[in-house]
Every structure is written in C-alpha cells, then in structure tokens.
Amino acid sequence: MKYAKRQNRPMLLLLLLSLHFLAVVMLFFTGMFFVPAYAHFFGTTKEVDGYQIIFQPYPASPITGTNSTLNFSVLASDGNNIYNVYTSVVIADKQTGNPIHQEPYRLYEISDITTRYVFDTPGSYVVTVQTRIPGDAKYASQPLVASFDVSAFPPGIPLDELLLYYVTPAAAVIAGIAVYLHSRNKI
Image 1 (cartoon, helix red, strand yellow):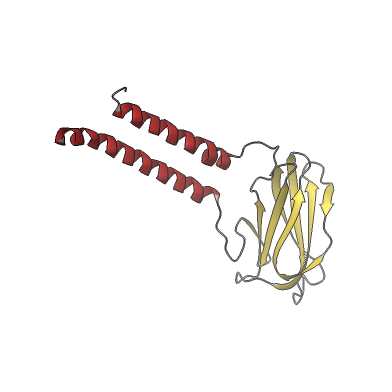
Image 2: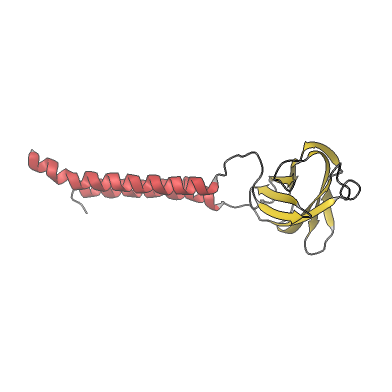
C-alpha cells in the first residue's frame, strides 16, 4: 500500500502544479483586462495650459454596432476635478474631418464626463471634448479643446473573451485528460 501512495505522489504533484499554473494564468489575464474603478478615469492624457484631459473609451477598442462609452476627465493642474463645467463632445471621421456626431454643451457638476455612442462603420475617428471652465479668464468664454484618436472595429471575439472563456477551459480539460491518462499508465 505504501508503494502505491509513493507512485501517486508525482501525479498529485503534477496535478497541483498544473492547477497552480492555470490559476496564475487566469489571475494574470483577469488583472490585465479588467480595469478597476477609481475616482478619476485613467487613459490617454493630454495637457493643455496646465489642465489635464483624460480620455478612456469602453471598450478600449469600440466595436461597430454596439454601445460604446466615451469617458473624459478634465482635471486642474493639481489633479482635482473642476466643478460646474460646460462640455460638448464632437466625433468626426478622421479621414474627411467631417463631424458625424455632436452633443450640445451641457452642464456637468464635476468634470468627469461620460457619453455613449454607437459607431456605425469600422474606421478611424477623432473624438474632441470642448470644455468651458467658469472662473478661468481664458476658458470661460472660449472652450478648452482636446482631441483623441479612436478606432472602431467590426464585431468579432475580443482577445480577452477568447482567452478567458475558451482557451483557459480548454487548457484545463486537456490537463485533466493528461493527468487521468497518466494515472492509468496510458501515456
């Protein structure tokens, strides 16, 4: 009986190592693709006259025909929100420069701006945020303008979904079959 337990030890070790490896891979990919929520948006940052303008679309690469969220954060030089700003968002075709969508100026209590848009066709676009800042001598009358490039892609399986929902379970099943066959001395 002791001999049988010693024979199973390498198999148990192999099983535990493969499960540990699988857990590390899943932890790595979940941490890489799921962005935690913070007080401000984190993404592409531009600085204009001491103001930081941050742009983060969700999903990171918008998919045509689906609802995309465009997040902006206009921050003062100290990194804090600005209160009671008037903001407009313009989306234009990058090749022609023609605007395809424009939201009128709207009052936002804080300078974290979120708008939704459905991109109809794949391609490159320029998203421009225009913000009027009360109390600023320059940007109270004329808007603070920052433009960001964004590309919309046709629908398909995103890489994070492919890895998380298909590759990882398939690898686990293959590892399980290999362990089973090895325990039966078939491989």
